[in-house]
Length: 324
Image (cartoon, rainbow, N blue to C red; front, top):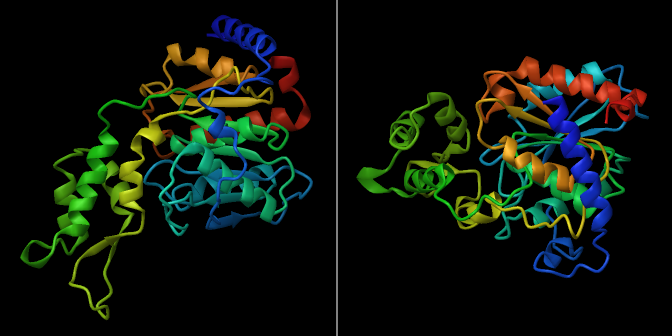
């Protein structure tokens, strides 16, 4: 793997030098526009008594159907061990953040850009899982001087749109759960779980999806049942955009340090996709988490935290320059 990684690094650097993107106005030009209307992201801030404010803060972005709550435990550990602030955000159409019909990576990046500006964050480190990983990558490509590093958890800068997605089945099932009325209304999470089991056999994944449902208030005028906190309609219409990656390495690359963490049982960052990582991020590094699938952080939280702490410590003391 080390020899392969060095070969990919050389490929990425050659690609970067050959294409500076200064005159590129191709089909992805829209992705670099700065007039996208952002939304203000809901967030939780985790700090420790020993936080050092001269250290770059971390912004942690969740994946599809996730929220700022997903990474609370590991974020508290990172804040304590790395002695810096960690901001867990709700991306648009998720958690407590506003819903918006536009849900693609230029828009997700614009929200993060506003967040960095509002909180006056200097050279933040962006960590993202799945959809959040692509949002972090998009942020770096659109704002090359802003982040100090990015960490992509089990996703690659590739276009995976156009196919049948399990995520589409989740959206359809959740929409059915919240739309049924009368005698067919689903009123409890137990009933909702039974419905979800028709499309997802893994109880852990179902429990994750169920965190997006809430019981309707008894004092409301609506019928008893459940409602969705996330923008299911907007997300459902945007699944191709979530799977896509509307950037081109001929238009922009990012030469800062980038760590890609992948589960060795996950197909999201196969060896073939490392070429795309090298093209966009010529200083990338890859770390595998043994016996983990796509949900790396929840499946192997201690291993994930260890990899992140080790890498950021190397970043802090300048040792990454010797390794890449």
